[in-house]
Image 1 (cartoon, one colour):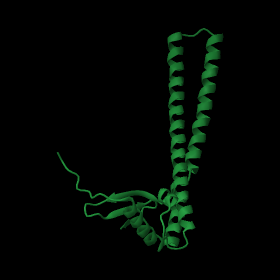
Image 2: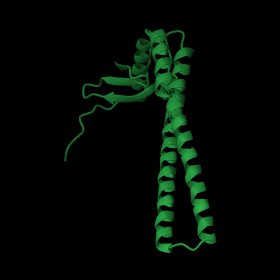
Image 3: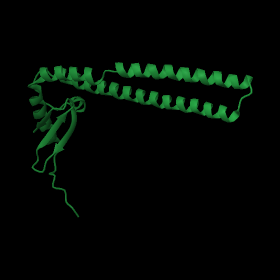
Image 4: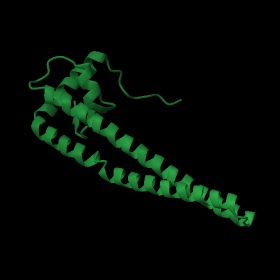
Length: 168
């Protein structure tokens, strides 16, 4: 049986080290805010996704109209039903592929918008802090901290949502 060598940490110790890391982070607050705003703009731009989505929707309309016309033609004129079914199934398959692509683009856009909100929350909380912190702020913790690594010697490495890592 393997035993964990990570030390036990008390909540007060974690909060104290968080305050230390935040205050170190705030030393470069203006630079970090500017970098976050640039990151937010670059990483969350949905223009290309919107353009692709529009193209896919237009193509879906075309395929849908072709399918409707093909069905109407089959109802008016006698056709080889094997050929008709093969062509019809091809149109349906094409439409389904476009539908999947549309859903994938929608998901990508949602992820980017969620990232925009995530970065925006970090920017908001960081911009509120004009002075050194003296007490723990749970909202700041949620908005600012991406993850914390605990080392065997008791050190903590705080990784903030902008990617900055500070050991405490």
